[in-house]
Length: 140
Ligand SMILES: [Zn+2]
Ligand SMILES: [Zn+2]
Image (cartoon, rainbow, N blue to C red; front, side, top):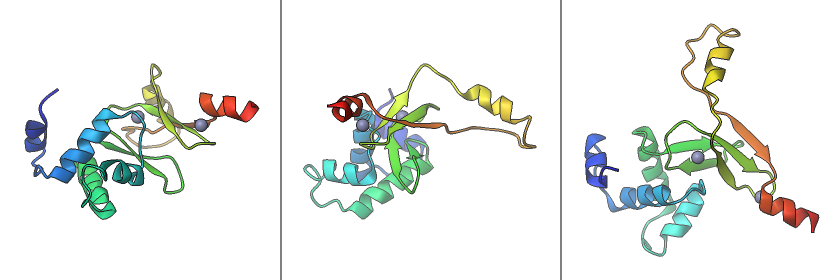
């Protein structure tokens, strides 16, 4: 992977400590955290960083496609350091969001062409269910 300075330079982004912290954290996790979770996690190292600053850093990073914003419904936004197209599943009990790997929904772009007069570019597929941990807890 390129180093952070050159990634940011390519995107013409100023390297601010806040952006670096948010970006690095998202690269380090597969948890798809919300802005609030990112804010709370980074607070130990960046006690002066406000939630508004976290939101601003996220917005900027989404705009230049360094991270992706996932909307799992009802304004429930999560953030993902993996910008490759992939699908997500959310647990309806605990709210966690996981990647779905090894299955590709790109074919859907072709399929929907039969139904709309659009040049189809991308799609987002979200699944909902009960995660493994919750399945265990719910049956206890
Ligand atoms: Zn769960
Ligand atoms: Zn993901």
